[in-house]
Length: 375
Image (cartoon, rainbow, N blue to C red; front, side):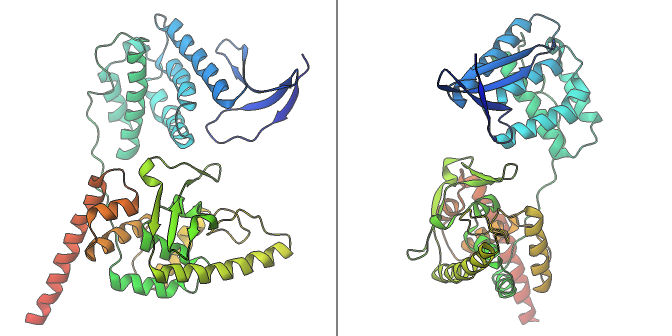
């Protein structure tokens, strides 16, 4: 059989595959190594078909091993391959890391059908990782064991990773800008090439990934609309669908923000034209890009944010705190909770409701300051 291979770039978590033409028909091909050293090839006319065949193969492999001496490590390797084809790339990368670094070293050698809550509890208690990482590792193992139980790979009445004591995660401290601090911050941002990135974040509450994948076609400045279509995948540097349907939304922005973005576009286009003339520009149609048109790196955003806050005389905060600031400022202005939820793209109003506690704290602080007048 004459195969003409054509290498294909892929996203993280998709696995290694290439395209080949057989008798005039194009196929996607993936080759994997089996535990006994043999190689196995899968063919599909589409990536979906290719992944389905591989998933089915791994599912059958696990089924034949269910009465054998399969270890947790062996099972998780097969489960991970099935998960690869049925989850977001970042989820797969997270699972792979958690299994490799935290789960397999602790319980990998245990027979799958002999895994007990005591094994899992010991893994948790002996871990030196943070509470957040420990809880994520336990959740990953719980998901994997749910699959094994649901598909009859093991005969267990209860999931051994469910009934265990987990460490309490520290409560997240939400930092927000007051109205006066926001004005200070915005004044300083005028001196930065991508200052409008931070202004837009603090006004709309858009997530960093949403802003970094935002293209000019998503902006309708005449009608003051921003359409959120995707989010930036930090691994492959490309836009992808957001996690929830609620995240896809249209945001109506203030007139001054629309005018500010229009002015920013003029300088952005001028900069791009100059770089193009020198052969240094990569056109991605991004609203907020690096000096050569490529997606911005988080480390550079953090550096600029830290510098701008310092020059504004404000305490350090994370980029995500600008989203928190937008939420609290909207609520302080009397905008309804349900409207704020829609603007932020929250799947549940319970997520938005947490800002009311921050707002109450701000009100108390304001009342305490007014005490000074009475002294």
